[in-house]
Image (cartoon, rainbow, N blue to C red; front, side, top):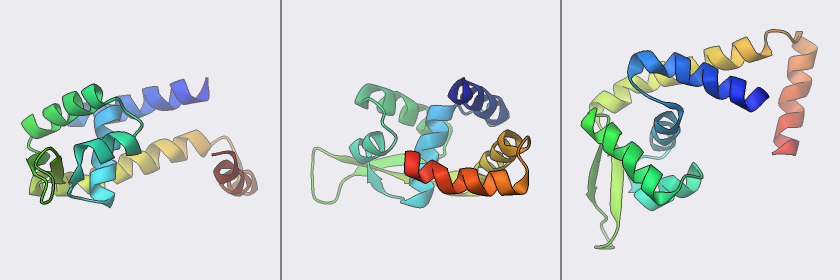
Amino acid sequence: MLSDSLDKQMNQALKPLGLNLSQFAIMMVLIERDDISQSDIGRQVLMASYATTRNIDVLVKMGLVQRHPHRQSRRSINICVTEQGTALAGKLINILREVNQALLQPLDEAEQETLKKLLPRLI
């Protein structure tokens, strides 16, 4: 199945960085919109709260993100990218670009453009 193949390729490409696909998804959310609540991250990546917490725990241990109290809610915790996490952003984007290019390689340019136009309609 295409999604399984894509997941496998992404996990393989992320392995040298010590990341998996779930952690990558969290990092991409934070790179795009830093300093948001842990629950917002989970909603954006469609991940259960326990899984979000576990993956963020790993990212904190790696020094890529940090937790801090939410400014308005004492029950919420916000997550922000550290300098080390920001430095990794370019590598993560390159991995995504390379995996996407490999996936699209069997298609000619016209087919790739058609696919890029059709996918958003399916999603």
